Image (tube, rainbow, N blue to C red; front, side, top):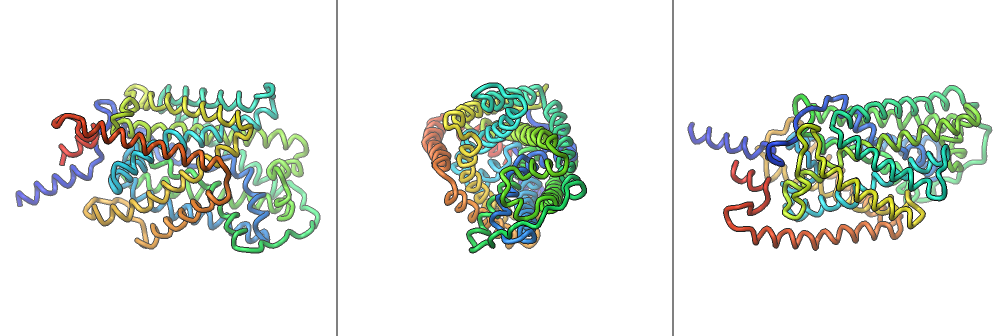
Length: 478
């Protein structure tokens, strides 16, 4: 009996998330409503005002187009189920970084953290900042580099808000998300109730091959992207471990419903052919419903949407950098948590500086938005795929860990998720340009830094931080 108690105690210690960053560390302070607002705010971004016309052009009818958006929601739900199990079993501010570390080892986790620092959230923030700059410049132009000036101001401003504290960051996010949802609701009302029915247009050519349907799904899945960011808040959510799973599933449901309604509104107001031929589908709809004032209104809405997603990505992105710093010898300066503000201040500052550098890159290429899409997409889907693999590995390697939420239909659900990720990874390489190679090249430099990290770790004297601060404490606890 005594031996069983000792074993159980050791098992619980192994299952518990390891302490991070010394005496100041993340604490549960986020309500479920905050978590849902963050997730919806990230996913419900500016893409819904750009992608629908591209999806319509690759589908044969309005029904096929709506089916594509429904399938995108189902695919996101499949991924969310996998993430819900991982996040509920191992709540940790590192999110995917922590899962990869446990399942695949230090190398893949290090490369992922490097990608998070230099490519994925930083590139996404820069992308969204350029979207904001594009539409803000239409309202109040600031000269030849107006878009870049606005983009840089967004990065600096949102970084400052989140450095001020978690409460300020979440309050800002809740307000922006509420405005965003209200704005999307206005588009839905305009399309379904106010816009006159379009005249019968020439039919759109039917999608001729699976490649056209596949390309439509690439646009759809990119528009749904970002729900995984909630994993980085798992250590800060109040309530039981199942609370995060429910917040994630509710968020996906809300976004899917809004996307279907928005596309139905576009279809009702413009028709399928009108959508496929539109350069600015939301603006065209609002012009039909409200006149020229609608164009101004939609510009404001898209700017708010971009700002909402950017703020949420700033908040969640810095959590990975913090967890990385707690584990890394080279980057241990990032592993500092500001107790009073309840936020990783240093990680936010470094993230902001790298994002500003990417804004500069987009300015030089003069194609800021497109450059950032190409830069981030392949790396993003590569690590999405590896996270799905981690779920399978951890089911085998750590079967005794308590899982408050277990993915249904295992192993079919995670295998389906892995297959979807592999398909979109291939598509992101096949349909993008040199920016994708730049993102992969930056990821490759992480391999050099990993070699340096491992060499410095091996030179650390026995009896000190032989592996890393967090891993050393984990070993001592077990």
